[in-house]
Length: 238
Image (cartoon, rainbow, N blue to C red):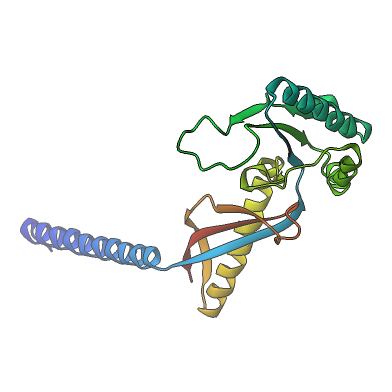
């Protein structure tokens, strides 16, 4: 027969033993979780596409030199009309054409100027075509020499007046390209996990991806290379 004191001691010992077992299990679980948290793989996913630009901006610059300012305005206005008619006759709509006010430079106004030109005034006009019909505008650009037959010379483009091509549909492309980049990252992570005798668990962290849009090359600026690289970190499990 157990006396009350012995029963109390046995109960206390059982409680202590149970507590030690529970504590051990908790410690094991915590260590396992710590180990799992420490097992990660960080990979990069890439998605890349080549697409045609869907918008073109074509600045057309023409100049006149002379000493009679009213006459220069008449001549530059005549050039404006010829250029605009050339564009419209080739399928460019009036809404795609914008004409800036003529810009006049008085080359004798600067007393420190070393200008030796016999002309006092340099007047220029900038006509800009902005269109989503990229192929049509490219074809017209290739034929702009026809304006020479009508006495209109187009000034060679400098850095600020070069034809530029852009991609307005980029925003619509972003979600699909991000999905593709993350899928590629997951394939890389799965291969890494397979090689390490484990499996990927879940995404620990991921960035929104770094997008870039570049010309495919210098000769085809209307073909754009769109690229996104995303970095994803996965946890691993056995």
